[in-house]
Image (cartoon, rainbow, N blue to C red; front, side, top):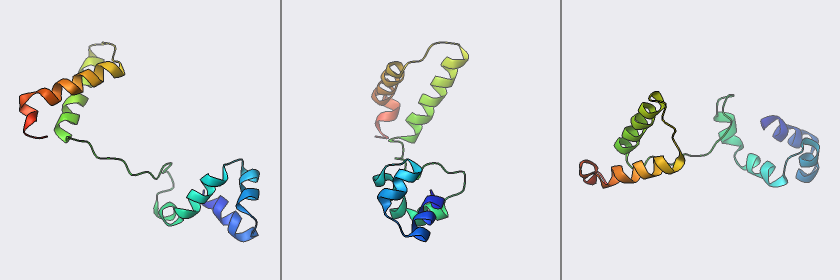
Length: 100
């Protein structure tokens, strides 16, 4: 990403031309230019710069994680719907009610 931004700055050509050359969308390049400082500060192995949202309730997340790993060890199939139902049941649990 930084190499493409540098190419753009050094050659002084339009964003549209650079986008065509590197086969990316012009809007994507504009976003990279806008986030240039964050890209410079990020480690070279970072692929995404999005800010993740924090878990709604960390204890529920941890309990859900342990439940999922336990189900995997028992070789039970886990679907997204099953995880959603389990998460909903955890939020209804009285032990977690005071955390919400």
